[in-house]
Image (cartoon, rainbow, N blue to C red):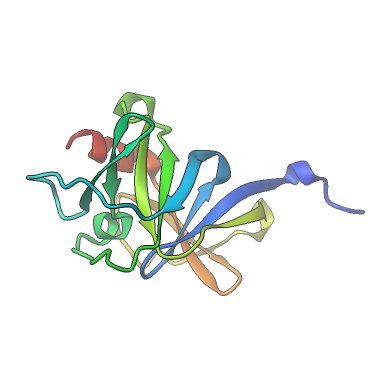
Length: 151
């Protein structure tokens, strides 16, 4: 018997510099070519700048820098993912993440998710999963958005 389409979750597999990010498709507002960002002074290493999107200045963060607490170059970023905020208490409606290739739309079934041992001990990720031959972060968006709102 064929699986019912409602058993699948539409997601985006987003290529980061060294990892992948898995987000529900509904959290992605738009994917655009990487624009020039407005710089922001006195921000942490993960804060890349701001982007004027639909008359709002969006914070642009490097998620891997936040997770790994390191500074990464974004010179090779080719796209910018505009993300809808999900944490109403963080007061962030949208923000942006650079990506290093085109995000891929995938349909996942819960039973296909294979959790791998968490090699990154970070409050900003829930877990890592294996999708085919790729390892992807499932981020803790509540925590990510809370830290963005505090800047």
